[in-house]
Length: 400
Image 1 (cartoon, rainbow, N blue to C red):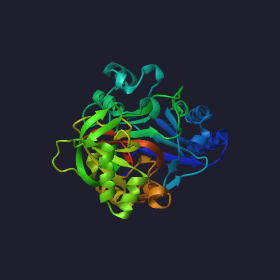
Image 2 (image 1 turned 90 degrees about the vertical axis):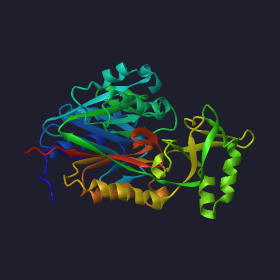
Image 3 (image 1 turned 45 degrees about the horizontal axis):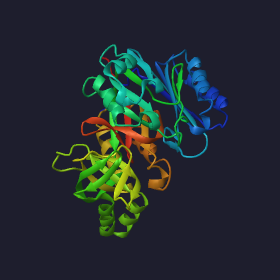
């Protein structure tokens, strides 16, 4: 049984031209031709090749569409429909529109400080909710806003259960090189995003890409971003012991890319793969016995070492899509953030994530990007996660 189509309108177009202005003019012309009227919002994702002139590109497309709420950002690579453009210049634009739909852009920059310093009043002043929000997308610079405080501060300002999705940008390897645009505001720091109200629903899709190895362990010593001891023993020594207990393939995977999962809820008696926040171990200091990882792990938390697993990643995505297709309403659009650890490096060729989502949801307009870390609902709250996938399905509300 199929639900009647909604009045919701979404279009996605892409361009591979190396010249930013040429690409922007192409996208602007295609969207004007395909849309029935001015959209409520514009989302532009561009590979790092376009970083210098991205603000002009967003302005060009926005002006051609009569000034919708607009957000643009840089990423290592972007996606459109079933395609993942893993190399070379690329730019993708999504226009979102429909009656009884309200979408506004927001931004935070260096003057606001890191998310840990954002007050509830500051966040509300930027989001400006006018009615119960239906969902929120946020895209953030990892060097200035890349902490768990980012989704936590946003969630604390919204009613419980409002979907929050997005991710940290992967378009630069150093601070000050990512580009973020929100309407006329341009920054190289902070975060930008869109808040949705009215006749629209945002349904999250979350998939994980790792499998736990060894036993769960308790962090008994921590110092800033370092885990100093696990179960009362030097953390690096415990990692070496786990490596020695593994089979060839798992041992090679953990040694090449050491990962650790931090339990979102340490009190949960049985923890599945969706219950861990995955973090890369940046440094194994065998002299001190410490493991250095982004954000660290608090003393008393439960952790487990992890390895990337293409089969697990495919199964998780399949199960999430099985749930999504139970809703008979059409998928009017998809915004996808996929970890930099997926793609061809995990599956052997590009197009796995975007292609499967596009096919299972009956070919909706899809805009995606490779994220340094994705924002996904884990343990009932939006959190920063790694090596996984986070997406939202846009569905217009069917009026009787």
